[in-house]
Image (cartoon, rainbow, N blue to C red; front, top):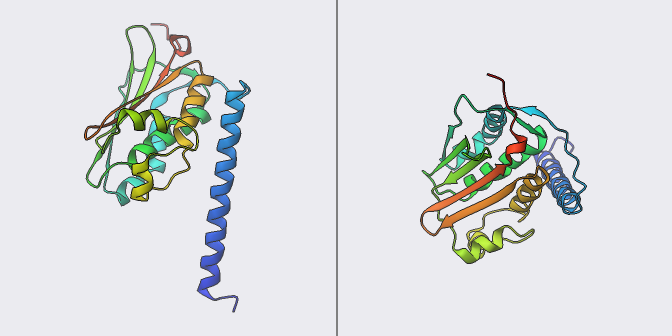
Length: 202
């Protein structure tokens, strides 16, 4: 019968699968455009704090379900950036989502932002999860590549997240750094060049 709850469940599964497939296609398009130097940025002056807060809000249920704490330390005196807000938010969703995904129950993910002495603008996402070996670090930044540990543990993922982050920050003229030690967690950093920092007149 049409009202059978099973059909509602089947329809929801089909919808979710379709959304997942669409997301993968969009991610592939982003990577291919970035690699070809054709990723279009819609640039404007942005404040990083609201974008990070929005990303954390969207991922709050994931954090709660895994019993992982999300901590923000962004400061109130950060200058604006000239950047594409949609792309920056996508970067933050990927980095924070990735940190949550690989955090153990009771873990913590911390997001910080700071201006360096050389004028670069750095946003860092740190977790206190299992961490990675140098071999795993080299592996995870490649598209479609996942660590053996992630596969064995059953952690879901396409293997595209960090490749997209690297492509999108490169499109902004910046770079992506990943540091990790087994048993000590992982720190992912996106670094915007000083030319992206908007100087506010005193």
